[in-house]
Amino acid sequence: MAVRRILRMGHPLLRQVSRRLEPGDLSDPALRGLLDDMVDTLHDYGGIGLAAPQIGESIRLAIIEIPGGPTRYGDLAPMPLTVFVNPQVNVIDAATAGYWEGCLSVPGLRGFVERPQHVRVQYQDLQGAEHAIELQGFPATVLQHEFDHLDGRLFVDRMDDMSLLVFEKEYERYHS
Image 1 (cartoon, one colour):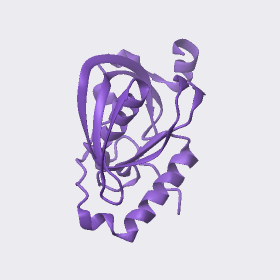
Image 2 (cartoon, helix red, strand yellow):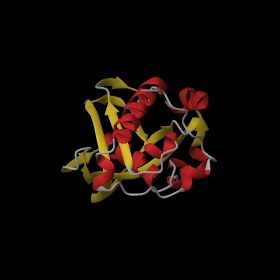
Image 3 (cartoon, helix red, strand yellow):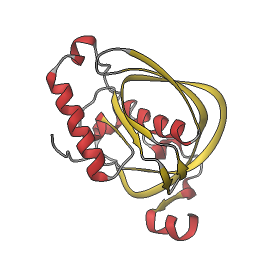
Image 4 (cartoon, one colour):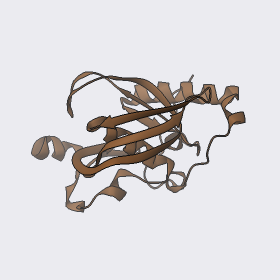
């Protein structure tokens, strides 16, 4: 287990579409080691989600862990650490809402991004079992943000109004 360096905006790997994990990949002990590194890195950096490309691994793997209680995004229900292998997002309701998103790969900046607020996610776990969950609100936004990394996208690519890309200190002063 180790804390890995997070790649930052500008690194070419962050703009690549990640490869799908095949059944044989899931039994590779190196994948379990990578997952342990991702969890350590997520906790060390204080994030709520991390995709494998952010630490230099161009595979379709992401983790989400939302602590419960009051956060800068409001009072949230907790989401335990969840591993998403080969996730696919389907929008159930196209109605959007916006949040000031930040990203460990875009440190020091926040941007206002509108995304669909009701989605269904189909994914596998590390054992290859198929799962599906339906999410609404902020958790739906978090999953879409992380899964964008698997397709070589960053939150800034989703912004409609670049005047709403701000440094974190200015966000805290003028927008929070």
